[in-house]
Amino acid sequence: MARVLTGVQSSGIPHLGNILGAIVPAIGLSNDPKNESLFFIANMHAITTTKDAGKIIENTYATAAAWLAFGFDTDKNTLFRQSDIPQVTELTWYLNCVTPYPMLANAHSFKDKASNLSDVNAGLFDYPVLMAADILMYDVNIVPVGKDQKQHLEMARDMAGAFNRIYGETFVLPESKIDEQVMTVPGIDGRKMSKSYGNFINIFLPDKKLRKVLMKIVTDTKGLEEPKDPDTCNVFKLYELMASPEEIATMRGNYTGGNYGYGHAKQALFELIITKFETERNRYWELIEDHDKIDAELSKGAEKAKIIGLEVLNRVRQKVGFGK
Ligand code: ADP
Ligand code: TRP
Image 1 (cartoon, rainbow, N blue to C red):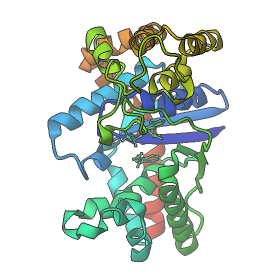
Image 2 (image 1 turned 30 degrees about the vertical axis):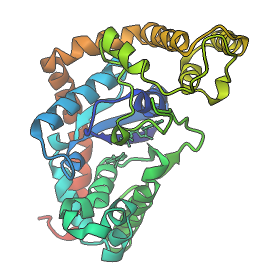
Image 3 (image 1 turned 180 degrees about the vertical axis):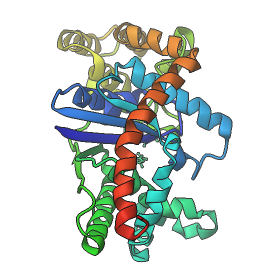
Image 4 (image 1 turned 180 degrees about the horizontal axis):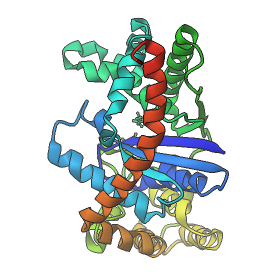
């Protein structure tokens, strides 16, 4: 049995890039009977940058609703909110005390912002240690993350190794699982879809609003009659990520044959999204109106995570000399 854990910051509403690049593959992994998956919403990490309680709450519900809508099984697995197990900050402290300053000063997440140090709060500097505590608290074997998180994972292993060397075997060393093959979903402007570029597609928007966003996808200016190149078109790239091989072949023919405009392709993309994700969108809308249901799911998850986490934390307390 491998224990798999991953987390996302509650810094936005999950978009199509998050869904295809992270949520769907993670749920696939969580359905494997050989795995036990823990998924959590990193709201403590989110407050290093988002200083708006309303937004943190909204994004936490949206993230939980998206995972549940896409079928994360909370009986087999565990879905929880980081702040529901505040003891993770206690573990962060123990790890802080074995973490050399230069390791943190070298973190990309910090270095990217280091040109303006007055903008860096201590939480942001300590971010990788809280992330290591998230992982080490649950005796995790595998952490699936994007390439951007690879360095944080290596730091978590280094901290676990340092603690184990000083105090004796305490932590399980986590392996990262970085899928180099993972698709990059383009945004409506053709760059990588990202919250920070404002080019994302929120598939949970109502039909009319969703259609409006899709109509804004940037294309070249070829006229209706002209044949078009599917492989350089953002609309086609998005279509290709979700359609069946037959649908893709037909769409290719439409592009190269002429007399098929970008408006038609965008309409087809819209129809594809609302058909393909009909169940998930309906479930999401039901859940997002039902905070009690999401709270109940998150409490159930916190209870399960706490049992594992507190056992590890007690082990650590003994090692550092806080036992009786
Ligand atoms: P954002 O760039 O919108 O801030 P995050 O960095 O919070 O997204 O990413 C959360 C997860 O979603 C990560 O696992 C990341 O690899 C995945 N992800 C984000 N954007 C994309 C994308 N455009 N294509 C594929 N996966 C993505
Ligand atoms: N730092 C991660 C991100 O921004 C989120 C995260 C926090 C995380 N703690 C984690 C991911 C533990 C994996 C494991 O994407």
